[in-house]
Image 1 (cartoon, helix red, strand yellow):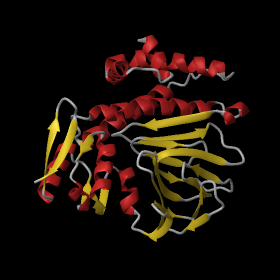
Image 2: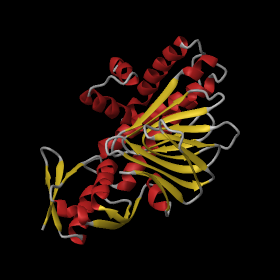
Image 3: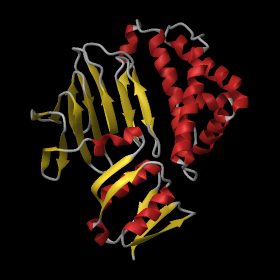
Image 4: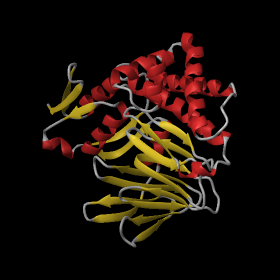
Length: 326
Protein backbone atom coordinates (compact mmCIF):
# COMPACT_ATOMS: atom_id res chain seq x y z
CA UNK A 1 0.00 0.00 0.00
CA UNK A 2 2.94 2.35 0.65
CA UNK A 3 3.93 2.23 -3.03
CA UNK A 4 0.32 2.85 -4.10
CA UNK A 5 0.09 5.92 -1.85
CA UNK A 6 3.33 7.24 -3.32
CA UNK A 7 2.00 6.74 -6.85
CA UNK A 8 -1.30 8.38 -5.84
CA UNK A 9 0.54 11.38 -4.39
CA UNK A 10 2.28 11.89 -7.75
CA UNK A 11 -0.88 11.16 -9.84
CA UNK A 12 0.53 7.96 -11.37
CA UNK A 13 -2.18 5.46 -10.40
CA UNK A 14 -3.91 3.24 -12.91
CA UNK A 15 -7.75 3.06 -12.69
CA UNK A 16 -7.55 -0.25 -10.81
CA UNK A 17 -4.94 1.03 -8.39
CA UNK A 18 -6.97 4.21 -7.85
CA UNK A 19 -10.00 2.15 -6.80
CA UNK A 20 -7.83 0.14 -4.39
CA UNK A 21 -6.49 3.30 -2.74
CA UNK A 22 -9.93 4.98 -2.44
CA UNK A 23 -11.41 1.80 -0.93
CA UNK A 24 -8.55 1.71 1.57
CA UNK A 25 -9.09 5.37 2.54
CA UNK A 26 -12.84 4.88 2.93
CA UNK A 27 -12.43 2.02 5.45
CA UNK A 28 -12.47 3.36 9.03
CA UNK A 29 -10.21 0.53 10.17
CA UNK A 30 -7.42 2.06 8.09
CA UNK A 31 -7.54 5.53 9.65
CA UNK A 32 -4.20 5.20 11.39
CA UNK A 33 -2.49 3.72 8.34
CA UNK A 34 -3.87 6.47 6.07
CA UNK A 35 -2.60 9.17 8.40
CA UNK A 36 0.86 7.60 8.66
CA UNK A 37 1.18 7.17 4.91
CA UNK A 38 0.09 10.71 4.07
CA UNK A 39 2.20 12.21 6.86
CA UNK A 40 5.28 10.33 5.63
CA UNK A 41 4.79 11.51 2.05
CA UNK A 42 4.09 15.00 3.24
CA UNK A 43 7.21 15.18 5.39
CA UNK A 44 9.26 14.05 2.39
CA UNK A 45 7.78 16.89 0.32
CA UNK A 46 8.40 19.39 3.12
CA UNK A 47 11.98 18.19 3.43
CA UNK A 48 12.59 18.68 -0.27
CA UNK A 49 11.29 22.25 0.08
CA UNK A 50 13.49 22.97 3.14
CA UNK A 51 10.36 23.31 5.25
CA UNK A 52 9.55 21.93 8.68
CA UNK A 53 7.60 18.65 8.94
CA UNK A 54 3.92 18.78 9.75
CA UNK A 55 3.22 17.32 13.19
CA UNK A 56 -0.15 18.86 13.95
CA UNK A 57 -2.75 16.12 14.54
CA UNK A 58 -5.39 18.48 13.13
CA UNK A 59 -4.18 17.47 9.66
CA UNK A 60 -5.75 14.05 9.92
CA UNK A 61 -8.90 15.46 11.47
CA UNK A 62 -9.37 17.81 8.53
CA UNK A 63 -8.77 14.96 6.07
CA UNK A 64 -11.40 12.85 7.79
CA UNK A 65 -13.87 15.73 7.87
CA UNK A 66 -13.39 16.33 4.16
CA UNK A 67 -14.01 12.67 3.33
CA UNK A 68 -17.11 12.64 5.56
CA UNK A 69 -18.52 15.76 3.87
CA UNK A 70 -18.10 14.22 0.44
CA UNK A 71 -19.87 11.06 1.60
CA UNK A 72 -22.77 13.19 2.85
CA UNK A 73 -23.01 14.88 -0.53
CA UNK A 74 -23.09 11.49 -2.24
CA UNK A 75 -25.92 10.36 0.03
CA UNK A 76 -27.92 13.53 -0.62
CA UNK A 77 -27.75 13.13 -4.38
CA UNK A 78 -28.68 9.43 -4.07
CA UNK A 79 -26.38 8.42 -6.93
CA UNK A 80 -25.80 4.68 -6.75
CA UNK A 81 -24.41 3.53 -10.08
CA UNK A 82 -22.03 6.48 -10.35
CA UNK A 83 -20.83 6.96 -6.78
CA UNK A 84 -17.24 6.31 -7.84
CA UNK A 85 -17.12 9.82 -9.28
CA UNK A 86 -17.83 11.29 -5.86
CA UNK A 87 -15.29 8.98 -4.23
CA UNK A 88 -12.67 10.42 -6.54
CA UNK A 89 -13.74 13.88 -5.41
CA UNK A 90 -13.24 12.86 -1.78
CA UNK A 91 -9.67 11.78 -2.49
CA UNK A 92 -9.01 15.02 -4.33
CA UNK A 93 -10.13 16.89 -1.24
CA UNK A 94 -7.53 14.96 0.76
CA UNK A 95 -4.81 16.25 -1.54
CA UNK A 96 -6.34 19.72 -1.40
CA UNK A 97 -6.36 19.83 2.40
CA UNK A 98 -2.73 18.73 2.54
CA UNK A 99 -1.72 21.32 -0.05
CA UNK A 100 -3.48 24.10 1.85
CA UNK A 101 -1.78 23.11 5.11
CA UNK A 102 1.56 23.11 3.30
CA UNK A 103 0.93 26.68 2.25
CA UNK A 104 -0.15 27.76 5.72
CA UNK A 105 2.73 26.02 7.47
CA UNK A 106 5.51 28.00 5.74
CA UNK A 107 4.07 31.16 4.15
CA UNK A 108 7.42 32.89 4.34
CA UNK A 109 9.08 30.59 1.80
CA UNK A 110 9.61 32.89 -1.19
CA UNK A 111 10.46 30.02 -3.52
CA UNK A 112 6.90 28.71 -3.17
CA UNK A 113 5.56 31.67 -5.13
CA UNK A 114 6.77 30.10 -8.35
CA UNK A 115 5.27 26.67 -7.56
CA UNK A 116 1.87 25.93 -9.01
CA UNK A 117 -0.90 24.05 -7.27
CA UNK A 118 -3.21 22.26 -9.70
CA UNK A 119 -6.61 20.87 -8.70
CA UNK A 120 -8.71 18.79 -11.07
CA UNK A 121 -12.33 17.81 -10.42
CA UNK A 122 -13.43 14.70 -12.35
CA UNK A 123 -16.73 14.28 -14.13
CA UNK A 124 -19.62 13.75 -11.74
CA UNK A 125 -18.10 15.76 -8.87
CA UNK A 126 -17.24 19.27 -7.75
CA UNK A 127 -14.69 20.76 -5.34
CA UNK A 128 -14.43 23.76 -3.04
CA UNK A 129 -11.01 25.44 -2.87
CA UNK A 130 -9.66 28.14 -0.58
CA UNK A 131 -6.89 30.13 -2.28
CA UNK A 132 -3.86 31.66 -0.49
CA UNK A 133 -5.62 35.06 -0.29
CA UNK A 134 -8.76 33.47 1.26
CA UNK A 135 -10.71 33.72 -1.99
CA UNK A 136 -13.10 30.78 -2.42
CA UNK A 137 -13.51 28.80 -5.64
CA UNK A 138 -16.10 26.14 -6.46
CA UNK A 139 -14.74 23.94 -9.26
CA UNK A 140 -17.31 22.19 -11.44
CA UNK A 141 -17.16 18.73 -13.04
CA UNK A 142 -14.36 18.08 -15.50
CA UNK A 143 -12.53 21.29 -14.58
CA UNK A 144 -8.95 22.19 -13.65
CA UNK A 145 -7.66 25.18 -11.68
CA UNK A 146 -3.99 26.12 -11.33
CA UNK A 147 -2.61 28.84 -9.04
CA UNK A 148 0.68 29.74 -7.30
CA UNK A 149 1.13 28.62 -3.72
CA UNK A 150 1.73 32.26 -2.85
CA UNK A 151 0.35 35.39 -4.47
CA UNK A 152 2.63 38.37 -5.01
CA UNK A 153 1.93 41.61 -6.86
CA UNK A 154 -0.82 39.83 -8.75
CA UNK A 155 -3.25 37.00 -8.02
CA UNK A 156 -3.21 34.87 -11.20
CA UNK A 157 -5.15 31.62 -11.65
CA UNK A 158 -5.69 29.52 -14.77
CA UNK A 159 -9.00 27.78 -15.47
CA UNK A 160 -9.99 25.03 -17.87
CA UNK A 161 -13.66 24.20 -17.36
CA UNK A 162 -16.10 25.98 -15.06
CA UNK A 163 -15.69 27.67 -11.68
CA UNK A 164 -17.51 30.07 -9.40
CA UNK A 165 -15.31 32.64 -7.66
CA UNK A 166 -15.81 34.62 -4.46
CA UNK A 167 -12.74 36.84 -4.61
CA UNK A 168 -11.37 38.33 -1.39
CA UNK A 169 -11.31 42.11 -1.71
CA UNK A 170 -7.94 43.84 -1.73
CA UNK A 171 -5.98 46.14 -4.03
CA UNK A 172 -4.04 43.31 -5.67
CA UNK A 173 -5.57 42.45 -9.07
CA UNK A 174 -7.10 38.98 -9.39
CA UNK A 175 -6.77 37.44 -12.86
CA UNK A 176 -8.54 34.36 -14.25
CA UNK A 177 -6.84 33.19 -17.43
CA UNK A 178 -8.66 30.95 -19.93
CA UNK A 179 -7.98 29.91 -23.50
CA UNK A 180 -10.54 32.51 -24.60
CA UNK A 181 -9.22 35.47 -22.65
CA UNK A 182 -8.68 36.91 -19.17
CA UNK A 183 -11.16 37.99 -16.48
CA UNK A 184 -9.79 40.73 -14.19
CA UNK A 185 -11.29 41.64 -10.81
CA UNK A 186 -10.38 43.09 -7.41
CA UNK A 187 -13.14 41.59 -5.26
CA UNK A 188 -16.41 40.16 -6.49
CA UNK A 189 -18.55 37.06 -7.13
CA UNK A 190 -18.81 35.61 -10.62
CA UNK A 191 -18.96 32.43 -12.66
CA UNK A 192 -16.60 31.52 -15.50
CA UNK A 193 -17.33 28.72 -17.96
CA UNK A 194 -14.42 27.92 -20.28
CA UNK A 195 -14.54 24.28 -21.36
CA UNK A 196 -12.31 23.28 -24.25
CA UNK A 197 -14.27 20.29 -25.56
CA UNK A 198 -17.34 22.28 -26.65
CA UNK A 199 -15.65 25.62 -27.41
CA UNK A 200 -17.94 27.37 -24.91
CA UNK A 201 -17.14 30.48 -22.89
CA UNK A 202 -19.29 32.50 -20.48
CA UNK A 203 -18.57 34.88 -17.64
CA UNK A 204 -21.58 35.72 -15.47
CA UNK A 205 -21.31 38.46 -12.86
CA UNK A 206 -23.33 38.32 -9.62
CA UNK A 207 -21.64 41.02 -7.55
CA UNK A 208 -18.95 43.67 -8.09
CA UNK A 209 -17.28 44.53 -11.38
CA UNK A 210 -15.16 42.44 -13.76
CA UNK A 211 -13.40 43.18 -17.02
CA UNK A 212 -12.93 40.59 -19.74
CA UNK A 213 -10.12 40.93 -22.27
CA UNK A 214 -10.33 38.78 -25.40
CA UNK A 215 -7.20 36.70 -25.93
CA UNK A 216 -4.55 38.16 -28.26
CA UNK A 217 -6.48 41.43 -28.67
CA UNK A 218 -6.82 44.78 -26.93
CA UNK A 219 -10.59 44.38 -26.77
CA UNK A 220 -11.83 44.66 -23.18
CA UNK A 221 -15.42 44.61 -21.90
CA UNK A 222 -16.55 45.60 -18.39
CA UNK A 223 -19.49 43.75 -16.85
CA UNK A 224 -21.99 44.97 -14.27
CA UNK A 225 -23.98 42.70 -11.90
CA UNK A 226 -26.55 40.63 -13.79
CA UNK A 227 -24.59 40.76 -17.05
CA UNK A 228 -22.96 37.93 -18.94
CA UNK A 229 -20.42 37.87 -21.73
CA UNK A 230 -20.77 34.87 -24.02
CA UNK A 231 -18.74 33.53 -26.94
CA UNK A 232 -20.81 33.03 -30.09
CA UNK A 233 -20.02 31.92 -33.64
CA UNK A 234 -19.42 35.55 -34.64
CA UNK A 235 -17.65 36.87 -31.54
CA UNK A 236 -18.48 37.90 -27.97
CA UNK A 237 -21.77 39.41 -26.85
CA UNK A 238 -22.92 40.95 -23.54
CA UNK A 239 -26.46 40.35 -22.30
CA UNK A 240 -28.63 40.60 -19.18
CA UNK A 241 -29.32 37.24 -17.50
CA UNK A 242 -30.82 35.71 -14.37
CA UNK A 243 -27.58 34.67 -12.75
CA UNK A 244 -29.11 31.78 -10.78
CA UNK A 245 -29.32 29.70 -13.95
CA UNK A 246 -25.54 29.90 -14.33
CA UNK A 247 -24.40 29.68 -10.70
CA UNK A 248 -26.80 27.24 -8.98
CA UNK A 249 -24.55 24.25 -9.73
CA UNK A 250 -22.24 25.26 -6.86
CA UNK A 251 -25.17 24.71 -4.46
CA UNK A 252 -25.77 21.19 -5.76
CA UNK A 253 -28.54 21.79 -8.25
CA UNK A 254 -29.03 22.61 -11.92
CA UNK A 255 -31.61 25.20 -12.97
CA UNK A 256 -32.76 25.37 -16.58
CA UNK A 257 -34.86 27.92 -18.45
CA UNK A 258 -35.60 26.84 -22.01
CA UNK A 259 -32.20 25.15 -22.19
CA UNK A 260 -31.49 23.88 -25.74
CA UNK A 261 -31.44 20.08 -25.82
CA UNK A 262 -27.76 19.72 -26.88
CA UNK A 263 -26.60 22.00 -24.02
CA UNK A 264 -28.92 20.23 -21.58
CA UNK A 265 -27.48 16.82 -22.48
CA UNK A 266 -23.89 18.11 -22.21
CA UNK A 267 -24.54 19.39 -18.69
CA UNK A 268 -26.07 16.06 -17.68
CA UNK A 269 -23.02 14.21 -18.96
CA UNK A 270 -20.68 16.31 -16.84
CA UNK A 271 -22.96 16.36 -13.79
CA UNK A 272 -23.45 12.58 -13.65
CA UNK A 273 -20.28 11.41 -15.41
CA UNK A 274 -22.20 9.50 -18.08
CA UNK A 275 -22.27 9.30 -21.86
CA UNK A 276 -25.57 10.21 -23.54
CA UNK A 277 -25.95 9.76 -27.29
CA UNK A 278 -28.61 10.70 -29.81
CA UNK A 279 -28.50 11.00 -33.60
CA UNK A 280 -31.87 12.48 -34.56
CA UNK A 281 -31.31 16.18 -35.48
CA UNK A 282 -34.97 16.87 -34.68
CA UNK A 283 -34.11 16.50 -31.00
CA UNK A 284 -31.95 19.60 -31.26
CA UNK A 285 -35.17 21.59 -31.51
CA UNK A 286 -36.26 20.55 -28.01
CA UNK A 287 -35.58 22.57 -24.88
CA UNK A 288 -35.94 21.96 -21.15
CA UNK A 289 -37.12 24.09 -18.23
CA UNK A 290 -36.89 22.80 -14.67
CA UNK A 291 -34.64 21.92 -11.73
CA UNK A 292 -32.42 18.90 -11.11
CA UNK A 293 -31.17 18.52 -7.56
CA UNK A 294 -31.25 15.11 -5.88
CA UNK A 295 -32.38 12.94 -8.77
CA UNK A 296 -30.30 10.04 -10.03
CA UNK A 297 -29.44 9.89 -13.72
CA UNK A 298 -32.05 7.15 -14.18
CA UNK A 299 -34.70 9.38 -12.65
CA UNK A 300 -33.65 12.23 -14.92
CA UNK A 301 -33.88 10.03 -18.01
CA UNK A 302 -37.37 8.91 -16.96
CA UNK A 303 -38.34 12.56 -16.52
CA UNK A 304 -37.07 13.40 -20.01
CA UNK A 305 -38.98 10.51 -21.58
CA UNK A 306 -42.23 11.66 -19.95
CA UNK A 307 -41.81 15.35 -20.69
CA UNK A 308 -40.71 15.01 -24.32
CA UNK A 309 -41.56 12.69 -27.24
CA UNK A 310 -38.45 10.55 -26.69
CA UNK A 311 -37.46 7.18 -25.29
CA UNK A 312 -34.15 5.95 -23.98
CA UNK A 313 -32.17 2.79 -23.33
CA UNK A 314 -29.03 1.99 -21.35
CA UNK A 315 -26.23 -0.34 -22.48
CA UNK A 316 -24.74 -2.05 -19.43
CA UNK A 317 -21.58 -3.02 -21.30
CA UNK A 318 -20.70 0.38 -22.74
CA UNK A 319 -22.48 2.32 -19.94
CA UNK A 320 -24.02 4.62 -22.54
CA UNK A 321 -27.54 6.08 -22.60
CA UNK A 322 -29.14 6.38 -26.04
CA UNK A 323 -32.07 8.70 -26.67
CA UNK A 324 -34.38 8.32 -29.66
CA UNK A 325 -37.55 10.02 -30.82
CA UNK A 326 -40.76 8.07 -30.13
